[in-house]
Length: 264
Ligand SMILES: [Zn+2]
Image (cartoon, rainbow, N blue to C red):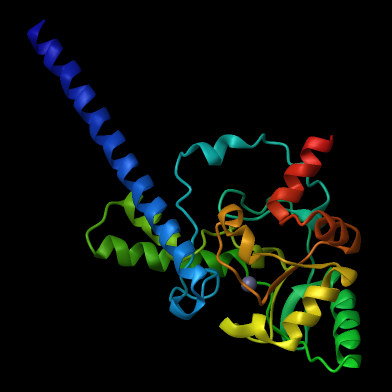
């Protein structure tokens, strides 16, 4: 009996330790996200870049995708059966059957669906004396895996356990399949410049991008929803109809997809 009791006690102690570890991880991520948001509120103090996906040196506000509620909050079935509004973010990975056809546009890989809309947008901007160019487009999940694994290896080398190593890596490198650049529908424009939002190019895009089906994916006032800090250079193709509907309602993509879900 006594032996059994101590076994039970050991069990609860282990569970307790696991819970404590989980809570600590969650707390650390929360603090991190908060810090990131604070940082982005003051651009002059913000780190050089944000978005995660490209190189490990980049940092991001993506929380670890642990067993937290958010991971299971959404039903399995996505409302975005329309590929163009596929949601790829901290909680949603790119669907495995996602259709895309990557082609090369001016030396940058992108999905074929954005070639014409981009060229039209670029021509219209040019006519207004504004020059637009794509500095980054499609990135493979394979490439993303390499970046992520490298970060995990580093953390393991620093003495972390596997789970912690992955959670910490996810703070600075998007998990494979969690980067919108994996879809080929996202583009970074005119280089990744912190002050891009002060340029005539940005002003032009704010007014006209939706007419060509592009949206500013990580707006300054939606950071708490996107979990990505303001990225004036990152645009996402969703098609003209969706882009205009989002603009009218002042929705970011997360809000718009949820809105469509509720419409059903
Ligand atoms: Zn980007």
